[in-house]
Length: 291
Image (cartoon, rainbow, N blue to C red; front, side, top):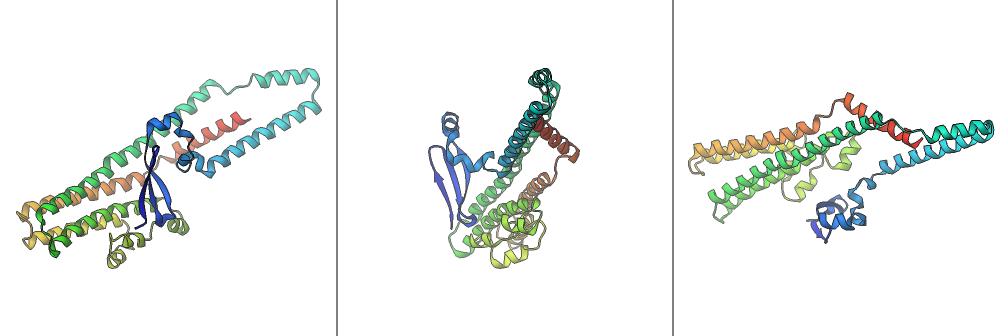
């Protein structure tokens, strides 16, 4: 009920009132962004500049630079003669980080960023879209097989659509739980709280209670959907029950596989040796540049 859209010439925003009216960018105007939109305060919360970590790192680096400058000035003024000072200044003025080191850091960071973007693109355009396609295809078939507006058929259509959308909502909660290291983080991310899904009407209180302790709640919902279609086929409520049961079970398997692939990709990290190397090289490069 608190979910809404906001639109401007630069941004289309999704606002979720349950998350403290947190705004997320659904789409941005590339032409406006290239001109002067990149200076818009509305973009701030979606950029790296909204992260406290970035500003803290910059503060550390500039503080280190200032400390090195003060220390160098003190040592030169107090303990060096004129010829030594000129020699030191000349040497410091010529100091640069070697080109091979710059190339190595840029190459490794480039691979890291490129692979991260590839994973993100595959998650959204590949597996997540496959899951959404399955939900839409099942709703399409339900509107054909249960076209009437009386209570029984209306409930059948709404149940399949409700379960399908609920599985996507639960997938996001399962994904948030992957990197929730403490109970406090789980609570702040809403990873284990299903009350918002119940409030939106996607799950009943009883269904949420059944899912609460399950390890992969988004996949369990597809077991429900498969069981529901199997029952309808056995009851003769679908035309050509045998063929339709096989079709709908294939849909359920495809959706479950998509969810499993997404969760596997999220759980599969870069090897710690590679990640550690990237972090160490990047830190050393930044500190050397600051000095």
